[in-house]
Image (tube, rainbow, N blue to C red; front, side):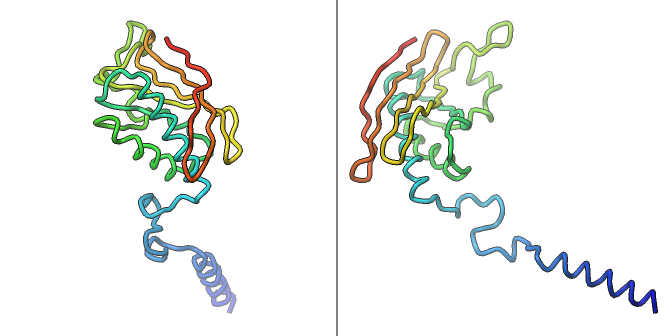
Length: 178
């Protein structure tokens, strides 16, 4: 009797634990883990994606080291989901032949040149882009973009951005050049 009761109790616990679990087949279509293409960004996140893309494009267009590639420091794209960050990369794809997450290519010697101590000194036909968000309130932002292509080649434009009629308008506040 004790064996039967124990077996029943173990089976009940296993069934209870697995009842709340789901497999990829149980998920709604397009929501399988890792399937970023089907995920949508919220309207608020879309505003940030558009802002970040506009600032990075403006910095790249101000000066760059060539259009062979763009590498983006993704950790500077704050308050974005992984899908939102991928959307920013997609928005930049018209500027260069290839657009990458910097972490994926930072050690690629065909893209970056290093000194004898292993420090990155310049890009090879490309640019490294990142952001510095000083202020963001939904419809206004103070934000800097960086287009770095060498220790002696970089631009640091700082913008006041305003969201009007569904688009971000950038007003250049200052420009530092290296």
